[in-house]
Image (cartoon, rainbow, N blue to C red; front, side, top):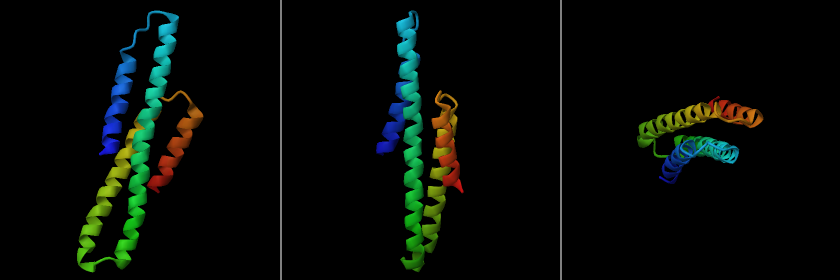
Length: 118
């Protein structure tokens, strides 16, 4: 729920930055900085979701071997849901990387996301 709220906030921050005035050099500079900050925020939030999804999947491995075998299908469904959450989060990261001006940082997020999906 916290990350859902943060995702909404990151979108709102970007939309707010887009609406900033850009008539003077100072306004343009401030708007560009606000958009850059909002872009990075919109990458960090789904990235956190991806990390948490991956961490949770690692915990499921323990349940498969040690949990109630009558609940094995529930564990399977949970795994599928976490995989979907991970993939969706990485898709959001990738979509937002296009706007990131720091290409080295963009590559780090892209590489890390690809590694998570392996």
